[in-house]
Length: 125
Image 1 (cartoon, rainbow, N blue to C red):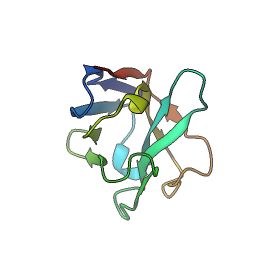
Image 2 (spheres, rainbow, N blue to C red):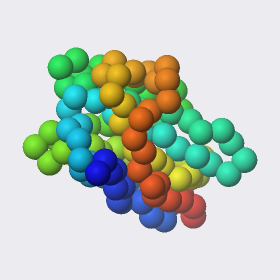
Image 3 (tube, rainbow, N blue to C red):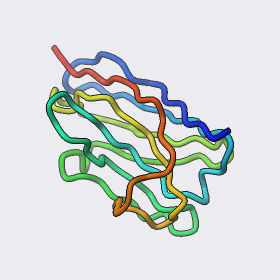
Image 4 (spheres, one colour):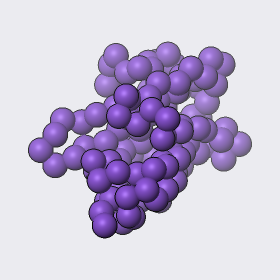
């Protein structure tokens, strides 16, 4: 059974850091494009960051997070991460990890195949 399970969300203050994790099961992450998306109230879903399969490893970051967020994967643990630094109130959203069988689908041109359940990140003083 294919599954993605996120963890690491929470309530933090502006300027703080968080690391989101996403553990995959039922398939191998390193042969997939992987990404993080977020959904804030009243806004459309935004592609935050992604990375192509391990053979290539090209990354993409939305302008809104460039220089603050870092995506990575640990193939041995079949887990992906999103390190978020210098968090801002506008980063508040539900964050979803996702994976796609089209290994170079980054930046995302098509919707991803597999999705996690989402984890809430709230940045507030």
